Image 1 (cartoon, helix red, strand yellow):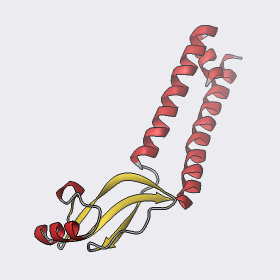
Image 2 (tube, rainbow, N blue to C red; image 1 turned 90 degrees about the horizontal axis):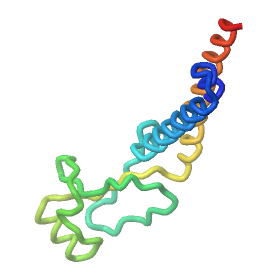
Image 3 (cartoon, rainbow, N blue to C red; image 1 turned 90 degrees about the vertical axis):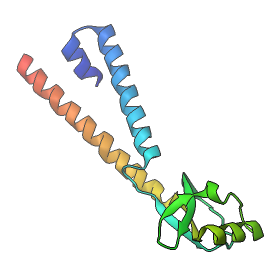
Length: 140
């Protein structure tokens, strides 16, 4: 990015500023895609009824969790905010909920995230290299 910015601006400080700006933007974009789970979709885990859900373990939670109705519709966990026990059982019965769910990426998805980043950033680096070489060949 720095070489391309230097070729385009022909000024050291402006090339450094553009390089910093583009690098920061790409970093923020990659982090946003991780948090939004755009490139690696999360898995949905369902626990039957009011039974205590199994421990989450080594998973990266999306923060999406709640209750499932008999028709399969997902609703907010705030409708029945009890973790387990008699209160949860009564609340789920009153509202017609049959199960609970949460979404998370298991630890094994780490490599999927890594390979996705490698492909994305490697492709960007390759594209920048090709553009830089084409500009250099035209100017020489």
